Length: 304
Image (cartoon, rainbow, N blue to C red):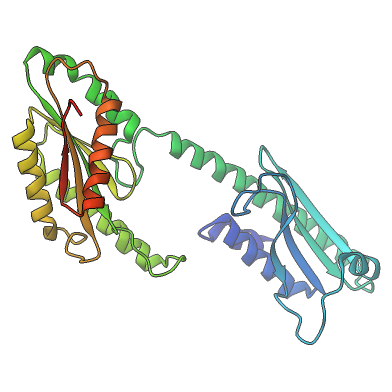
């Protein structure tokens, strides 16, 4: 039991840990057939209705032998089940088929092991679910430590009164590194993921060097960032956009020919009554035009 729990806890994800611990148990006990099933948890994509899905089977195939139906297998073998409910997500269970001659004492011991394993996995899944929900609710990205849109908008809104009082314009820049997270396959290896994280952080450092310390930078996703330049009029912001696009090779991501940098800009004039969401929509439209016309940047005027 200790070895199974250690395998479960030491894996990179609950799903991988449960599969490895399950296979370890099966190699020791040698059942005829074994299944990990779920009515929602660990099923990708998440089902719209509660229904059982096979997450993993042992052995993965039976050469030279057609798999028997569930009814036939249940009637001719000893079936051990261990099922645990996960709050708000559904159920997860382990089903093991042994020969009828399997000793009763060993079967009771295996049942206790399976129940402990599935209950531990269920607790880990629930904790992981709560942890991910907390991460999504954070006002900043836990990887890059940049404010997400909600916190970025709150910070910018606080500056409107001062900008109006000092009669200063400001510019919103929407910067997109297209192809920054390019992968050759659907499965991302660990080394490739580390390299991509390094590219993301290098791109952020590049943008931070391109603006003043008093300007703001926020993150929309791993490839899209939003900048707020206090006092930046149309001419100054266009010049800044030109520099970012021209010097993109200074960061490791921008040096990749598969990565393109596109920028959408919009300037807020002092005294404007439009909200930041309105300026964001204009900047996003400008960015889409820049991408469609394959130009480095596109400027959306306030009166557009």
